[in-house]
Length: 200
Image (cartoon, rainbow, N blue to C red):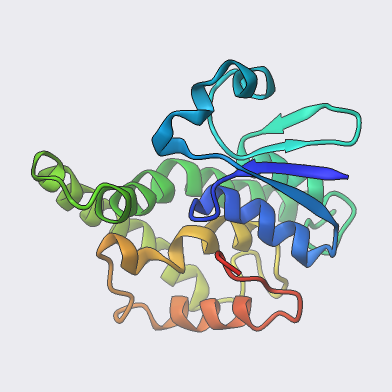
């Protein structure tokens, strides 16, 4: 059976959990506490020498890491990863956007506020993350005003990658009131019959 090592509150780990539920694949969950330094233990570093979650352990013991890489592996051959080269490239485009423009700002602002309780020494950084995060949200809004999902008419792993931290952006101090297309998209994602919540 597949095994996921992660933290339920982590958006990157939630991507993998949501994907597995959408595919109706059984798995085991191995809880990892990043605040206690468990990703830096010798045992964990054997699974991911980069010392980060999530990690997907396959039936043969092989370990895969980096959330978006895991999404691509799991979605191969499914409805969530288009086969047409242009559409598949657009999926990758949004995944790269998530890792370089969205996650470093939306997720980090959330970490500072939710996990760390907004320490004084990170308040200025939090403000910078908010400004950059709103810029990323505006990019998403422009696309979602044109199409129901990030890559056209169909729900894909591009949506999973960006849903993970967008749906909890308020925990980082973001307001989505100015982004009606994103709000409608969030509702569409959550309405899937095999949807699972972050803590569900």
